[in-house]
Image 1: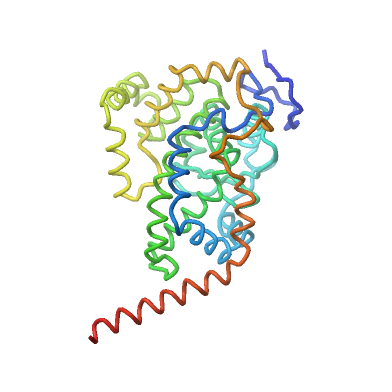
Image 2 (image 1 turned 90 degrees about the vertical axis):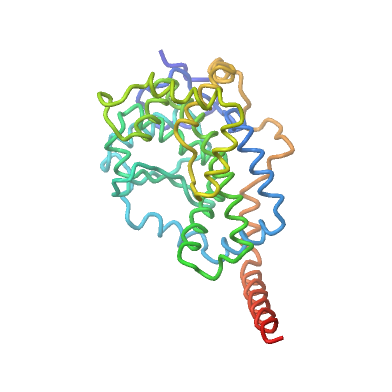
Amino acid sequence: MIDQGSGPGQDFGGEEARAKRVLAEISSRAWEHPADRAALQALRRIPVFDEVLRTMFGFFGEKPIRLAFQANAVKVSARQFPQVHSLYREVCQTMDPEGEYEVFVSQTPMVNAGAYGMERPFIILNSGTVRLLSEEELAFILGHELGHIMSDHVLYRTMTVLLIQLAGMGFPIVGLAARAVLVALLEWYRKSELSSDRAGLLAVQDPEVAMGAMLKMAGGGTPGEMDLDEFLAQAEAYRTGGDVADQVYKVLNLMATTHPFYVLRVSEIRGWLEGGDYDRILRGEYSRRGDPDPAYQEDLAAAARAYAQGARGMMDQMTDAARRMGEAFREGFRG
């Protein structure tokens, strides 16, 4: 029996949702991981953080970024990938987002997905993900990516991807300041995955489905080749290893990895389940949109608009600063 909730949520379709409870007007604060919020706070305290993002935002702009990400992908609709379209409508009915966000499927065997954009977010599923996962597991991934959008993660996540690409190409915009920001962005990026794993679980409301999806994403095998119980035992090593998780994150920093290990993510999900917050949310005890925001949360939409203003001037300033540093460096050698 579907509990349709009591809030004025959007109507995303008449199909019966797979989840048992529609989370009407839920706020992303209900599922956000403390490590996600702490990493974001630390990121925003970096002196050059705003300058680098303002420059990046102004340099690329909203429309070119959307076109670049979507140029080699197919938009999901009732006629294109209809199964994915139906699953996504059900996920949206359950999670009750404020807006409708497009979904695309991109042809690549790599099993992954992402939420991108600035002021108009969208989701991209790799075709390898669509082929590997069951319907319910794919719904978990869609809920995970929708969670990134509802948590206002997409601006910073998009900038992270762009900085990684530019750093790999040796593009001059990625100087020392931007590289420092990239290291901090990667640290937050991984922690944001822990928040969205919780959102994905809320979308399907079945812990076995959520952890089974992570098992497949980690190993890429079929159910007959893998065992969830053994994978959970593997994850237990992280839960009983004291500070080992922090050490893993330090290693990941050196590897420039965007995602934490799936074993670690399963361990975090189990901890959240055991802590009772998941059950409380399903009982309807959760923060709602419009409730007073804590002091740590700032309006990212307003921040994005601010980044766009004066971005060209900031680019000129950074270019001039780089030129002056190069001249000073050469003068030092002459002396």
